[in-house]
Image 1 (spheres, rainbow, N blue to C red):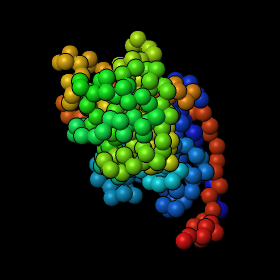
Image 2 (cartoon, one colour):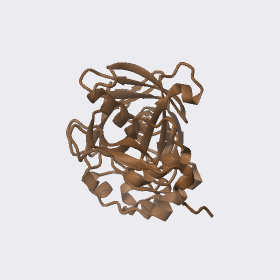
Image 3 (cartoon, rainbow, N blue to C red):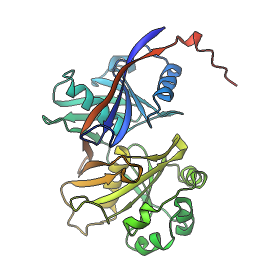
Image 4 (cartoon, rainbow, N blue to C red):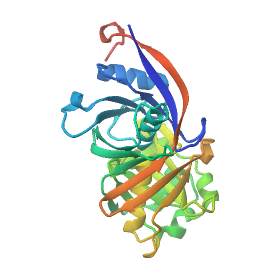
Length: 306
């Protein structure tokens, strides 16, 4: 039975026990899919990132290989777990600042670390498709007053947006209404399946902090995550959505600031820059737990499969 180092790292937060907790296994060389899935389930974070050398995934120009597992399934891309991984590695001196190329199941991405420890993850150019959906149905799935969606629906449509992991983006009129959301997980999953998205990201420009562009909440029960506290991949997609629908009427700021997680006592902030060739999402990360995990060999796990 081998032992591997495992971390819990809070992404998009400057101090522990805030933001979005991600599991990080900084040396996952040789672990099987089943072992990685078991580790992710044991750590219990919304996603756990497993870091290996890029050579283990076909070599090429990439510096590293990252795979991501939720407690129930593998995920192609995870923003907060990427921020967590490189924030932790930089803080302990394992890597220097600068840019790295990382291979994921969603393709290669560029990750850069500033001197102050801010980690930036470049996501692919956003794709945005406005969809025709009954706002009453969406409101029922989210557990909010339908008027909260209809009040902004004429100017800000519901859309599927993606920079690698698609989300159904739903504008809400006021923070109070967004805070009252009490989602029906089954109904949210049905929406996710119908529109082929990971989950629903609901937002309002009625933010808590005057410096914030918006306040968001992300519901991803299809991946075993009823509410994701602070969501990097969704934030990038929403940045692309805001440009697509011309939410700022041509006067878009150079950098957006999204606040999220406050309604689940995990406040965090995501910096978003929508650029000509893609989207960059940035934030800080801090290690909350650093330990070792004993991992049984595959043949000794005694798991009964149907």
